[in-house]
Image (cartoon, one colour):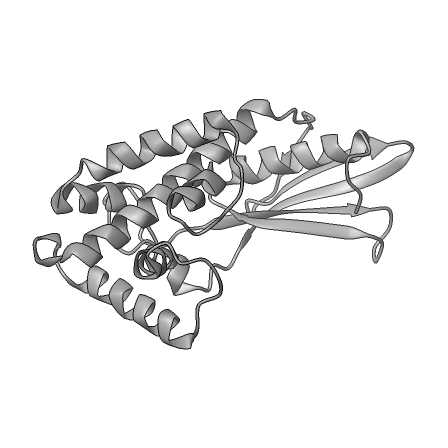
Length: 220
């Protein structure tokens, strides 16, 4: 669905499945019906980040132009995103509102893609153990090889990945998670992936990775 969103924005020239194109169009129509105040409420409620805003600003300023953008384009997008974050929605101009819309198109499409992936995934249900540091451990054996799994918190150092606007339902400081899978003794092959917004999301992704390893769809 994210690819279909880029196609509608004129940023990508590829064929997408009809159902993804229809879903992306529904998202656009829903967002397009919102005024500045409602756009702000939706952006705040979905924890839109500065990265999201900057992407939306760049897509809006590109106005459907394909190809690489230069440094001036990046600076203009950054400036527009900063203006959106600093101004109340009643003082947004057309470009400000369009940038927020573009960011919401993408973030809602990403959410839809994630939900679809979860609905189609086949996790390997593992027996997890938690320690005093909130880390989770599990072991999986595939073809006689033992794989150790770890779910742990990670430092989210990028302020651009934090929500732009405070929402009382969201924690002031977000904790993000990653999973790590290692095979055999220490210093053997390992792989990690993240960040994920919750321990449950990281655990689900790790269990899906074990399924992929067991069926030969990937390796460490």
